[in-house]
Image 1 (cartoon, rainbow, N blue to C red):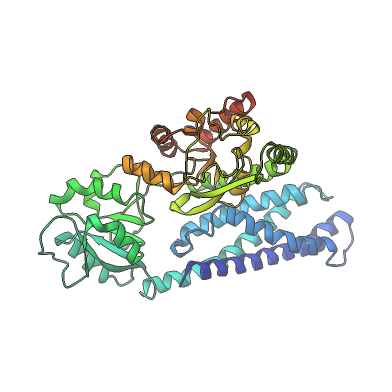
Image 2 (image 1 turned 90 degrees about the vertical axis):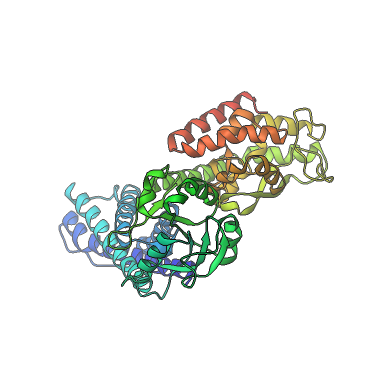
Length: 471
């Protein structure tokens, strides 16, 4: 099973249930609310308004679900969490539809508004959650019966690791761990897991092992004598796209937030370095999309004028794009207005300086006002970037930075941004030293991410743009 097929199931049923809910609500308005208003029976006719709604409303719901993250991590759904998520998504969506489409209806009295809202919400939520529950239950059933699982690596090789492995394997209902093997922490050849799991090597090789085995879960089972290595183990795993779990007796050695994810299964604690609550992440993404659409539309005159001035100022294309590294270390193409002469980097990647002769006259103005960055609203709209986040770098410079500051990979936990705390403080970095200096502000941002911090950074960025103080 792959996540794409599971997402398709959710999308199909969500479209169908949204259509059904809209149809039931339309019939309810015609057969109950309108007779109350007019005092006579009303013939049920599916008007043009119904068919327009049947086309637009399901697409609205699909967009809302996508923006609020419902289609993320679909193979790890919890039915209880799905209930809560479906409940607040339905409430939010019905509120938007109510104020956009229903509030201007002519009604018999104000109680009709309440009944209209409750009917639409009740039908939509109940049908949506019912089919989601069926799809998720089918997946959970397959996991419990060991028909499907997540590639898992055991870190540790001695008594506690063996006990944990045996307990997990003996579970009547599987927790979904499909073990690829184990890695040892200390030296020696006498590993208790030999004969039970494949020995994949020492923990220092964990990055290569995770990539080769496509590991999705890592379970750390340290002996008491190995506790001093726990912090470094977790730090090494920080940049990997894996879920980290530890046995409970190491709880007091961990920093950051942790959570239990099983009541009746084997007791494991998940190291949960979640950047922001799901609700704030959803709002942040909605802000990204809404503001980007507005910017792309309202700044059309700026785009047109900038394109003209770039073209008249020097030979070459209007836009400049190159590959940057974004969230989860995935490459994407970032777009800017060209602020340098054509072929400015024909000798290879070069950072610019304040008096760089390669910068064009209009390019210098664009850099001070950040106008060169505004094509990146497109990157934000399609999900490669966010409005606020660490500035993305090229792999060429990432290699140089990580050689001196390995914690740079921590920045890949979030979407890069058009603006950032480091960008507000430093502007364009002129060398690797400044990149590393800027790094501490980006790490601080990630550790303190919130909607309020994003708004503050956006305000400071707007002031820099208006005052032309960009570096």
